[in-house]
Length: 194
Picture 1 (tube, helix red, strand yellow):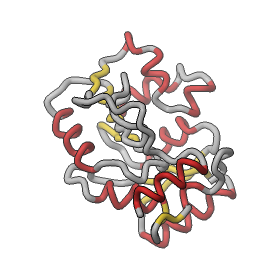
Picture 2 (picture 1 turned 45 degrees about the vertical axis):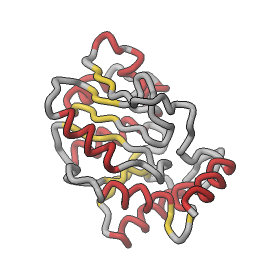
Picture 3 (picture 1 turned 135 degrees about the horizontal axis):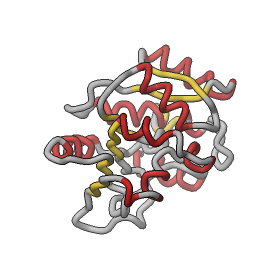
Picture 4 (picture 1 turned 135 degrees about the vertical axis):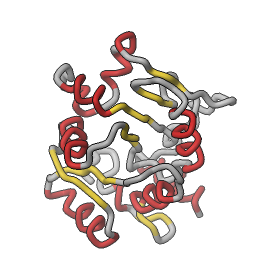
């Protein structure tokens, strides 16, 4: 909620639904995700997200505002799993069929990270990262300040240390922005949804 470029963006409404609700509704359409957990901060500005999750009966955790990686770590301790999928809350058009396809393909692979952003060929706002939990835990101690804000950046920076498999689009759509970072993005995505 404390986004500098677009304050309160997660709970901004587009055609009767908040951006966060649109993300969650798309994730609920997947056949292969067992739990959806909103990992938000314990900063007062995110109380509205906590209240939203309580009202909609959505699992959530709260943690550090600036150390997002620590927040993920605490979430993974509370909800243990072998793999987790990172989806950004500013992606109201996230494609559930893409997520399902990547999960299906990942089951046939041996990987630390199965992603579609290294290199990016899908639009921004369609990012899917399937991360092996023990790889995340073992790497956390090496995270520097920028890695703590951008959770998966460490793995791409040190890619030679990890088994990263990238899922590529048949057409390069990386220049297309379907996420909501700015007021202009919000207006464009609102028009698309309407």
